[in-house]
Image (cartoon, rainbow, N blue to C red; front, side, top):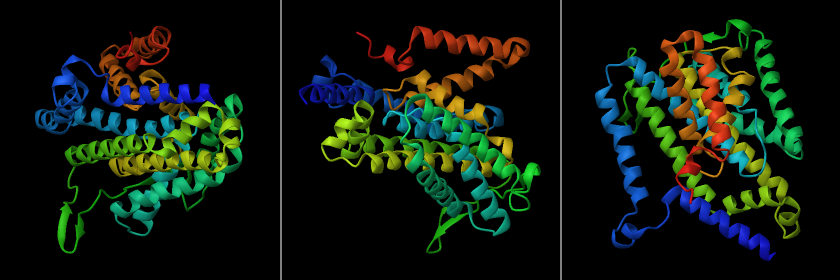
Length: 346
């Protein structure tokens, strides 16, 4: 028990380091830590300066929108790592979320602002039902099952007949309309092809997801999740309902994946069974590994770095994929604990 308490303290220190940084000389005399100041300026650049500078560049805004939402979806995968599971099924739940929004908005005319949470809830419900039996597996067995789940979901939508429109997919998904409450317009309708409203929506979803997961990981539930990664038998012996918390973590992961799929369906205004494949699920996992599994910002750093690197290499099309792969392998070998481990190396 003493060893477990020590490990718990070390985990707590890691989480604190990931969010606030180590206390230094300046932090002892300043009201805010350097990490807080850095986060403030990064947020200022992300939410204010960057969109002002590039508001007329659809390409640049599109890259950052994609990176933001891929970060959101990957954060769900990161959460399942905290319970000790390697999840390669996030593409399946992004697909479920995307099709939920597409069917509800195109077939039934439901507003995107209602479709968005419903897509997350649908993905979470299906994830909980599937997760209950498969989360009993560990290691490579769980990874293989989730890998198959992505492909099975793709085939299910491909053979969904008129309901999912098979391989032709669902197109002409309407852009988000105005969001009004009591006659007051909170969010105006997304008109034309301007990507700026989607930029702010993606940024808001990313920030909300980060805040929610940070609160979750610092709560009692977050400590229970980490105790499952360390030793499920020990957690069960002290009265923790292991199965319930495993399913809870997986359902939250699926909810986040469903939100991401819903966003991309509205942003791209179409969805096909091949929109998310096994490759996408593997990339969601790679973003977490590259950024660092011990850090909440790991998936965000991994997604932005890989996506922007891929776009920068676009000019050398012949060797783009090869150089991209070399970059990934180099980082994995040089920094096996992720890029963010550089910040905290002694």
